[in-house]
Image 1: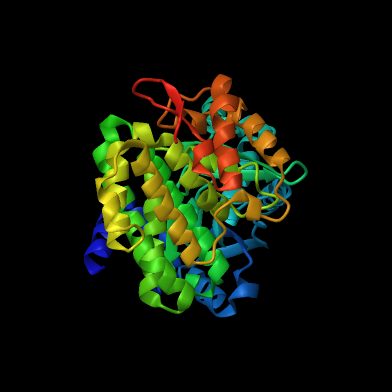
Image 2: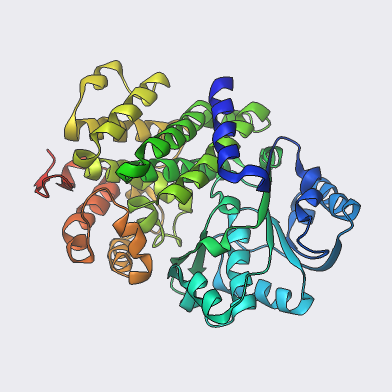
Length: 433
């Protein structure tokens, strides 16, 4: 495992260079990240309530660096509700800081990204959903976003590393996405030891989110970046396969916590090189009944089967890795094509079962057929088009109902035979079994 961790650190170093501090017990270095960014800091966090000792370490580091806290507002609730974005925006406008610091999990970091956009550029939040709209507005106004330092506290979304901001309308329970290089935090820190306070359920949610980042980007990797993505994805996935059960059994296991932190950071690296697709896209319509990571964990086996004819190289590598960690029997190594997809899907399901996760949508309280209808409709939204375009099969809004509906019905029933495949190589659709 040391060799895999060392490889992960090397990959992350190449990705973030000197703008990122990460590891065990590094929170006290946060003050060093503010050099040349300014002295007046708005602090967005609820860490003082959840972990007073860590909050003191953070505060002392800021004070020792000569920084002045000019405002303080709580972090966002799970899934970054729009209302929390607007609250943080108002805190920024009131405090007029030189730099914003958010110490939080992914939801707080995502909400702060969107709040900085609104505080700097104005306009309506809906104007910025989709790809590149922040950059376009900043260029037209001749403005730069306020510097942002993100201190991650949870292994999962890797929001501290990425160009994504997931925001939820809690009236409709629909999540939408801002995608823009301009919202990548200026500098960031992740003290993996902070994740020891994560519950087993939260730990699994985050781990499966990170696994989904690696998996979905790997599935949809373009030829020109395929070798790079394969190295990132397989390293991240292996760390999760090796460490998730250990962290669930023993939350204080520093070795496992570090491994999951490195793995989910690699998930963040992956989505900066490529993009997620099916499971992430569908999860955006399930926020009222499922956490994001749990939704992705349920959905990815069924999308794996759907994608199978188009991704044989990826599936063979994954099956070898799953076999290494006793998630697939030896006789599956000779599988090919659609059956190979089914073997990998079963490995993903086995991992979920080992940590007590549901494996079908039918198991989820509150899930109904209306969620499928809502997810299919959201898939056709131009502001979510990037997820559709990232699929390793030629999906368009026009064929969503024909091919994606069976995938979601399969995920509801736990029945792979319901899935119709659409091969990117020959574009012929067929039932699997």
